[in-house]
Each structure stands twice: as structure tokens, then as C-alpha cells.
Image: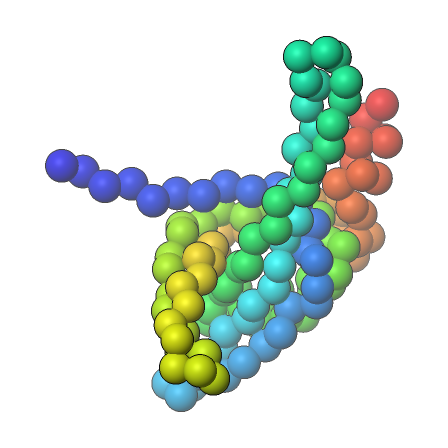
Amino acid sequence: MASFNKVMLVGNLTRDPEMRMLASGQQMVRFGVAVNRVYKDAQGQRHEEANFFNVTAFAKQAETLAHYAKKGTLIFIDGRLQARTVMNDKGESRTYHDIVVEGFQFLGGAGKGKTLEDEEEQAA
């Protein structure tokens, strides 16, 4: 049976990217992305909810993101879902699910740091 693991998101960075150097010498960056969902319930009431995702990028993409992205930047991310397990101080294992970047695009113009809300207001 074939397998498929693909994630596409448009959202805003929730924190500045944090650059790290792996033991292999490869660069890695981690940051968070918030994706807002607006919907109407059965009574016609408008609701908004936010979902938060941890994102990881490597190599040249990590370098580019660390240099140009900042908290609030609107971004399109194309990637895959990956689980990682970490032991905490008590010796318990915790599993986290990250989105690993395979491609991305800054949205809202170069260096403008527009948010998703800015784009929605402009479209209205």
C-alpha cells in the first residue's frame, strides 16, 4: 500500500526562529506557526479558533528562515509531519509532532511582516 505524508499551512510565526547547529554541522531552525480557522456554527454565530504547530527546517532553508522570518511573519509552509520522542527530567518519554519544511514562501511582500489578519482586512 502506498503512503503519503504532506502538510500545507498558511499562518503567522508565533515566535522568532531559533537557529541551532547539529553535531553533523548542519543548521536547523525551529519556530511556531499559528493557523486561524473562522467558521459559523449551526445558529449562524461566527467563531474563530487558532491551531498552533511546531515547525523545523534544515540546511539552506533554516538559514533563510532565521535571517528573514520573525514573529508575526505570514508564511506558506509545504512539508511533512514527523514524530520525535524526548525524555524529560523524570525519565518519562514525550512524543512531539513537528512539521518538517520541504518548501516555503513568505507572503505579504518582502520584509513587510504582514499578518494573516492584515491580509484579510486588505481583501475585505
